[in-house]
Each structure stands twice: as structure tokens, then as C-alpha cells.
Length: 249
Image (tube, rainbow, N blue to C red):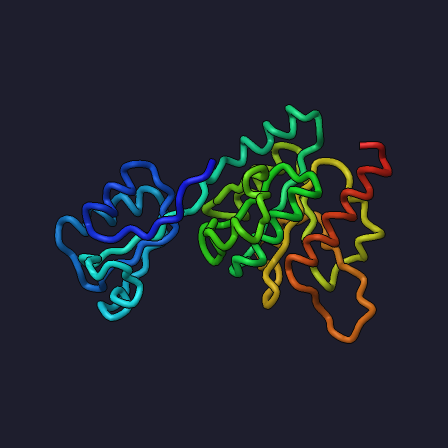
């Protein structure tokens, strides 16, 4: 379900945004400000596990669109997030093995939008992103997804490792993209699967990689050793699609 992308400024407006149920991606607060209204906003932010950044007045002035921020600015999501459980329910309703994308450290909104588009075309039941060190559902992401965000749900979780552990209890197994892994053509990628894609610079983080059952490498024949994250996601996703089609699923 869509909502308008919003930069919310001013103490009353920010507090109302939290209390109305808007998903606040990030909260910027004037460093050193400790008065009552700001403390109330910070309590709401903690309750919703919102990322809070304390910044200088100069930085707030740069971020402000109105010049009346009163020491607080909130960035709200352009789209509503869903729950991981809804993705599993969606797979059950379709009579399909769950197929999820999990993104570890994808901070470029263009990459995120492109991956959501690929996930939709590959028949994935949803995309999971972490709250920190990751792009959120901005208007840029929505545009880059070319409409896929209307159809492919995205969940935002506090801890990707813990989410993987919970999904394993639901019968999913996990494969992450890693250039030092085994060739994707030698892996059985069928069944309920979570495809884990890391950032272009750092790849999948150590703790997340340790939770994965397999690491899959994309065969390289060129002179450089890596692919754009969204391209890598597409290549691996369509190997999963190929194997499912070959198995008649």
C-alpha cells in the first residue's frame, strides 16, 4: 500500500507522524537538545526502533525544507512495509515453495529498486531488508522498481541474522552470493529458499554468511572480479527459476 514520501519537520508534526503509524526511516535531532517534547519524540523513536542521528544545527538547516524544523526532522517511508509472515502466507496461498530475497547492506536506492523489480519478475514472494545500513523505500526506489513495488512486498527487520534463524524453523534454507563459493550451476537451489545478496564493496557480512547453508559463486569470464549487486541478484535468481522450471514447479 502506497503512502506519500514525506519529510516531516517540527516537534508536533514529527510526534504526530510517529503516533499516526507512519513508518519513520530516520530521525534527525539537534545534538544536545534534551527538553521535554524532544524526549517524548525520542521515546517514540525507541519504541519503534527508528534510527536516530544527532546532528548540528547547521546540518539540520541543510536538511530542512521549511526552515522551521525546531530541532527535529523525520524522513518517512514512501511505501508501507509488510511483515515476513505475510510473505510466507502469500507463498502458501499460491501453493509454491517460499522464495525470498534478503539484502545485506544494500545502501544504493537504485540497486534496491532494481532488485525489487527482479524479485517480482522471478516470482519471489518478498524482499527483506535490515533497518540499518540499508536503503529504505524512498520515491527513488519506487521509480527504479518500475512498478514492482506495487506487487512485491518488502519487510524491514531489526536483525537479518535472527530473521534467517526464524525462517529456517519454517523450512527455508539459505544461499548467499559470494565469489569464493561453489559454482551456482553445481548447487541444488530448489525448495523453500532465501537468496542473500550483499553490498558490492563488502559482500555479505560474516554473521549473515555463517547462517547461510551454501555460498554460490557466479562464474566469471572477464577481467574484473565482481558484478553490480542488482545484476548478481538477477543472475542467481534466474538460476533458481531455471531449476524450479526444470523440476516442473
